[in-house]
Picture 1 (spheres, rainbow, N blue to C red):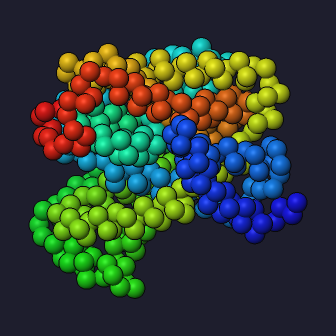
Picture 2 (picture 1 turned 180 degrees about the horizontal axis):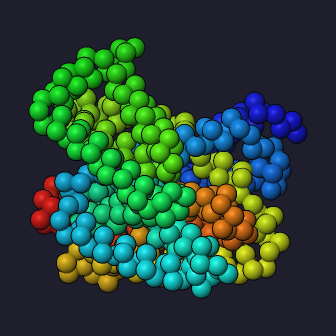
Length: 406
């Protein structure tokens, strides 16, 4: 079949449209995250099997934007006021434990210390962008369990981003630290502007253009995202930190806007992200997945189940430290499974490792495949386990509650 860039783009668009239809059909039997269909279809129609889609510079660029948008949405999704205090502190402690165990396990899995660090950081990640929709659809975002899980996911994305910036980006730790301080200053400046009335003028402009061709809110999102991603690249650090910081920054700027306008803006941003850019990233992940390298390498095949177990041990077990006080064993098990769900950062870390020559393609494919299995299995099993908790039916989902109650 013709594999020109235009043909590949059309097939990718067809996959993006088909994935929700397949998800809806299969969902009558079992609920499977949409990203699984996107990745699997990418593998099926990509070079590994049918060859209808071939990687090219244009789709790679769109996929990079999709990855950036995914982390922007993750940063924008986090309600720090809701998860602050005990949930965030315990989640942070759990991630530090994961980092120590992960690097140790990574060194055991690899022939070199450098490769072990890449593997260890990948194993400490949690796919917040994957588990948040599951929690939202289940009405769990505001329950104690949902707040704890969100905290685990937030730290499980931000922690590895810090590790990538400090240790894996190829820059010196001093340079990376100065860059992080710079991002903190930018965020602090946004908070100061919002507190001194700039937010009200911004909100008024958003409201006045929300139903016009001006669409200032959407244009502002793109400006913030591209600016911080561009700044990250210019400073020699991974773009994901800039994308995540852009999401946090935009959420701060939008704080205090009329609720109806804020919800409408969120819907527009999610339409661009989840309707266009993010699916391209996951489909491209499947298209570029080295299935041949995985199945032809006995060592990589052996590593695949080991990495799945490692995600549960390295990331899952420490995540249970963030469980609400008095949480039932079923809820702790569910939190273990949600915390061990990882893919986007695994893809990013392995890509950096392969580019730097620290990871071979077989090991990278095994790690990504383990991440795919975690996205396929862990949220489903975690939600089913949570529903078996004695307290699941006691409190209505998304009931209003304070942070202290968590």
